[in-house]
Length: 271
Image (cartoon, rainbow, N blue to C red; front, side):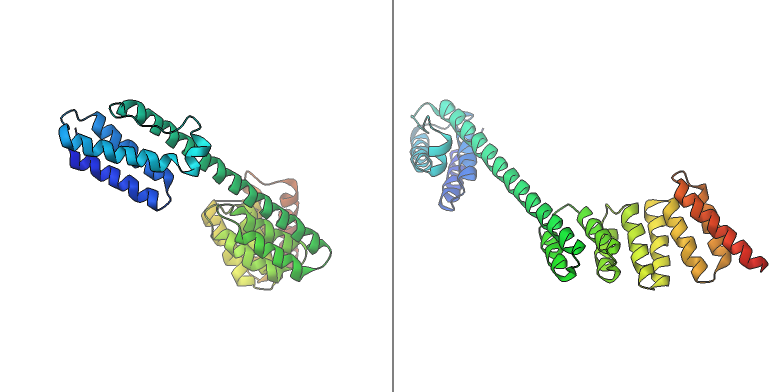
């Protein structure tokens, strides 16, 4: 049970929300006040009359809102002594407001994602046409719309890398591997971008970081072996070529390159 003061505090809160144009919270606070009144039979006399007057005022205020006109076509009517019925009406009103808000939010999310997809597609076409600066503008705008779609960094970075724009790809891929959702594609592309920029030691470190973060991957071991070979560190290169051959995800392409790398190092040792 609640006191008359506690009920009035909820009603005052409801009125405050109304004046801040937050109809949903106003209805919810009103419902809380009604529930307290219904569950508190000890509230009688002047206290109850004051509460009922406050409820009637709120019913009038909320009933004139655009939200009520749209979502409560049956009206938001309050009769003294029928607080339980009015509580049900308030609960119905709030549920409809909540559903409408969620639908609007979902529509906004879909519109944002559609805009982002269109920018990515347009950026890709510009990239294919050799208009790098314009493509980057579209990619920047697409990324500005991102919320939890971290894969966008990998997508953009890989597209730039495949187009031969390693310098522009590297920052995107650095963002990609910094996310919790970074996968083999992100780490491999990041290492390849750094390799293309002749940032060899950074590329080696990227491969090591990737292996530590996501676990053993054949393609990362292969890239690491190739980088170590270029650096002239033969024992390390041989060890990583061997590791590339031992992984469960080793495919025929990785196997062929790893075997070729070991053969190349063996031939150089006997030369």
